[in-house]
Length: 235
Length: 270
Image (cartoon, rainbow over all chains, first blue to last red; front, top):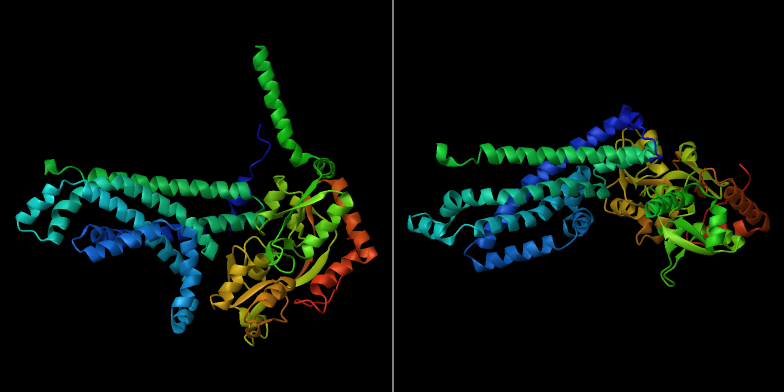
């Protein structure tokens, strides 16, 4: 039935294997850094969005709508090429000597994902009955204290399943960074293809690597919910 | 039972049909369909780019496939491809012929067949004026080029200490050079000349004397399609003999064009 003969030996040995493995490392690096940035910004924006100050609420909403509703690829080009027109020349010259492709990729992925994370966190917080907040406030907590000690610990549990989705999307979206020359997994798979013409094998191997990374993330979060966030009853 | 037999037969027929564009005789298929589908570049003057006035893809590559389609007596259909996508597009049967600044290499020739060389150039570097005297000045620098091109592989070989950054296509690589994100853009001189001619600040850039490879371009055809290859080669030789090939060269690279170059080749059997 299958006419094609898979030639795994070529792709999974020598320099081609080295390229693919270095691609896995870069994919993990860019995903981890963007995830940290996305979580930080996501929590911050969600808090502003839920906060008592009308001006900040509207600002946070504008941020959400803008970054959620424009294509990630456009945002990547914006941070990499568009930033040149905005930043001062001295900074541009310095950035050119650094690994700016990688940094622009992290910023684009982090900000894009933070918009989705903020929305997930907001809906998690809104699922906690407002009486909880009222009770905490009347018990003497300030707004931030009530958030931190009463609302967020409960909201996080509800938010975890949708957050896992964002983590997985982020990892897969990181492949778009290849368009600005970040040598991540898809870039390397494409490179293996153009040297060896074994595109099907190279991209299959890359797909399998993405699958393993995704399963690992899902598994790790699963363990986290089971052990760290387990019901406090036993304590 | 009869129904089942019919279904199996229909399924088998589907498989047979599905295979024809891969194995079949392109010449016969093209003539039967009345259309030749050519994979071309659409943002790479003067080889293939969208003309601002007519909104049609024009260029050196396009004039060649146009002439071949005329000889076959069929309509020409242009399909934009990138350096990375052109070979898969051909082998999957989405296009019948590649005319997209494609260098003939032994590795590629294992996958597809090439026509006689219809254009020849060499790989050089586009840099900010006065920054590069020799290959040494490029060592350890960031060099921009396009994904899936021979330029990428030649640069990595000639400059092992340099970081080769591959963009989706050449315009992005040139933008990165203009913004100082890469130190040089490397590819065939003819492509560099085309990019330079379109740049708003062309006085700031120059093409180096440093040359790291020879780049003979061929039209790409599906492997083992001898009849079609013979027709295409015949057409190229006749175009050379009649002066049509030289006229096309002069139109795009002659002294009056934005990208003047010397024609250091003639089309001849390899």
